[in-house]
Length: 287
Picture 1 (cartoon, rainbow, N blue to C red):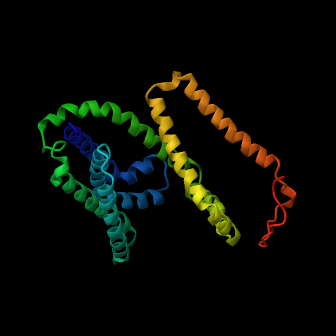
Picture 2: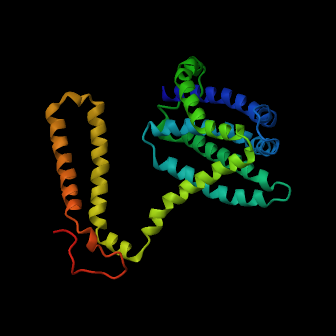
Picture 3: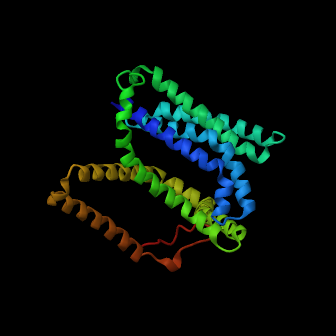
């Protein structure tokens, strides 16, 4: 039935891709009607028109990716996704530098790369022997699952669209839309810079040396933490919330962890911390 569900999802994606393509084709008058800046509307319309071919490939690609993920097919998905990414670098550079395209070359390159990625995954699903049971060719029976899938797809799509687009539309509706949209970009870049500050501080030689000394222990901690999160999810999914003894044991373990870290921080000699580049091994940090 997975192949039937895949075909039903692709039918829905095709229908909505056509609707989205029509909206994108008339992006400029729609944005002007929504009181956006005419210059911004004109530039956005040019970008969206060249991105229209890619929306069909992207919609099919997402369905095929979910089809593979539900069957725990990971490495072929990664490999067939990495190859178009490498090709996209050359395509994007060539089309952006192409005379007469420049700005429009970026969305056109994205559309071409999406089609390459989608075709590779589609051919893999159609001809790989491991999918003979799941994929048995095209069937008219898939039309019976269109409305069933839409009941789940429409609310999810509405939430995603509202979350991503409301900020941009509000910025365009404010006075001086060119300034407000620029401020949105500044805020996002500032957020990225803020995330890069600890990364930059972590590049200090002393921190790198100290970090390298505990890397094996940190690796073990990361692995155990990941496994613990998965196991807790399985326990919740199995309905073991009423297993009082299990949860009491977990709470006791977390209390021991939090208590130990709290005592460590509480007993630390913060005034003796050496923040210079000179290593000081004579003064212990904890007594």
